[in-house]
Length: 339
Image 1 (cartoon, rainbow, N blue to C red):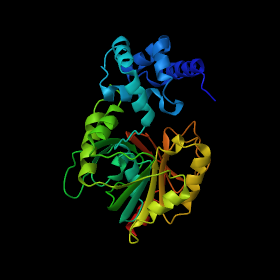
Image 2 (image 1 turned 90 degrees about the horizontal axis):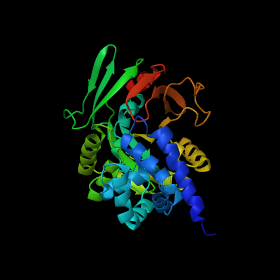
Image 3 (image 1 turned 135 degrees about the vertical axis):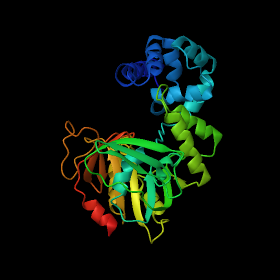
Image 4 (image 1 turned 180 degrees about the vertical axis):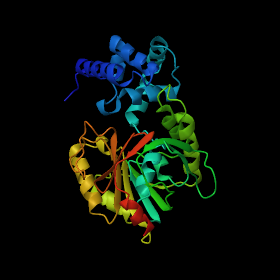
């Protein structure tokens, strides 16, 4: 069946209007202005309607245009560039997907990893370029009312320093990662100039510090590349084949930091069931209302962030991009780690 161009253009207008109204304000004035411009310019909306619906999200399309050289100026300048590079933009956006790879997430993963006895074999679902597979290679500064807890790799301060606010009493110690691997539909190469530019272009204009942090983390990943496998981890065979490569003398830890909401429900349920069938610890960062399997039950309206979980146990309310940890679990994990 042929798609209706008018209906697709209307869908673009609706999506970009929602982005301009509900998502961009307070985070990126530039993106908010571009999105408002798309809503008001039928010709530009029609160009974006040529991109498949699953690949035309505003943060992805805007990132692709910036990667290709669009000026970070007002909507008129951006729209003029887009009209001159429409075919290239449509082709590139159609081949890309949102792959926000934020190493800051390691700051909220680390307290959960600290509950796991080492050594650890780390397997991430939705790994992108694998920047969240290096929690042992980054430096951390955890700020609380009692001061600052500083953690650094064994060989000294890292070029990536992650600042995180904490409350409660989370276990904080560097994990011993001896093997690292990831699964992604389209893995990115930290050493590839094009992939690096794409990942840094996914940082929204105005998000101070993120580009430099991601670039430094990409250098760490490029110097010691993880094992990255292309595939759909919601297929149990794909997940179990990757897990089978982990060394037998290490504790397998599977992480799903922020990826589950982006998987359709049926695939998400298959993935969760496949993870639970593994002899592995499962650590995830999820919206509190994503499912009802938390122990103890979580009230989405009162939780105060995403849920950092271990094997379904709700450990902490966290910022999904890593800026805070509000620890709410008992410290039993430390006993496990020490054993």
